[in-house]
Length: 251
Image 1: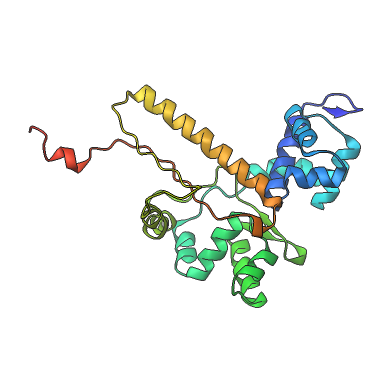
Image 2 (image 1 turned 90 degrees about the horizontal axis):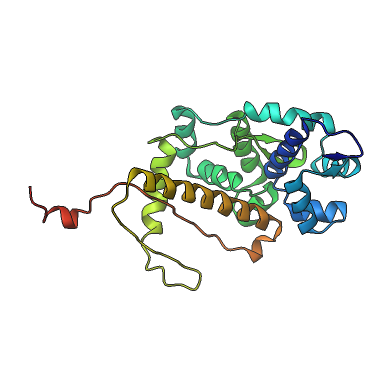
């Protein structure tokens, strides 16, 4: 609830909008905590219980450089946020490796300053490439080259589209070319004979785990890049008959 005023039905929507704005700007709960003078745990509790004073709400809006009226419009805008690119738009991204790199990194929370610091983009080139993403409505390029993501929470790449094909060719296959024996590595291949119900349960657990991994990634964005290491996680399940056994089956 908004503390100090009657309980309003749109309070939940305000918190949903707050989370959307925080994520789009790469602001974590720790960043909010530092700004309003609370602990990170208190901020997490505030969001989970959806209780906040108008003063703190206004302070968070100042951090996000928006006003309360803009915040209340965010939820409506979120329903219109980009959920899918056309095939032509995806081709436009993957046809240029440097454009793809900027797109991938920006969607993973990299800022303009970080891209300039760690990659060999000139200011002119980077602004041009960000402007293209703005035109595609993947981002909104704000004053002082701040980046706001405009994709919906359920944004995805096209099935069998150019970008998923690019990932499969250049990322997934190379990712698996490893013994996974390092200190922070983990690999476990499992197989079984499952009912459709069991398969649905496993898929639900994988979706939940993917959401939790994404949330952990959001939390770590407050840390300097020097304290973070690029990781990749592959979650997958599908019906599969290994050729090794198929050649021995009775026909």
